[in-house]
Length: 162
Image 1: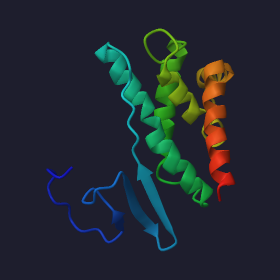
Image 2: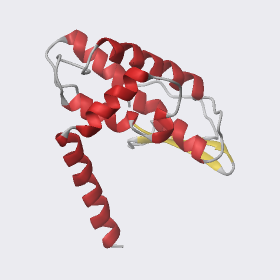
Image 3: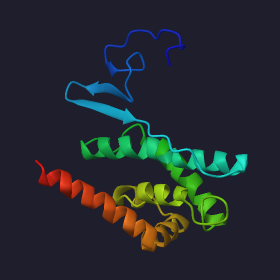
Image 4: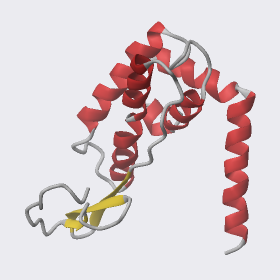
């Protein structure tokens, strides 16, 4: 990011790409800011077309997390609602044509996507039967259950240290 041109000053930008940070923080109001982090998981596939589809589909987290956070803070119909609807509609089309995201089989991409799509407020956003069936398939898999149980155990251990 250091090679990017200097950006104009914005008093609401609390953390931008001028700092060595993996998050951005932008003030929406005096009492509300949005935090955006980008976790990048490279899809493990050989086909460039599948790679692109997985990367595009994984980008749903980029909009669902801040949308959910704004909703939680009382901004029910925030500016991200339309964008999220478009992303979820795209995922619905793709999942209507296939059982798994990539490579014609279950992969880690499915674990990651199911973790985002299973969020209650995301699931309640519109009627998407292919997505619902996908989430049900994923969350019933032993590997998903183990990954979730391991994650919850880490959270509980951290809580226990408080």
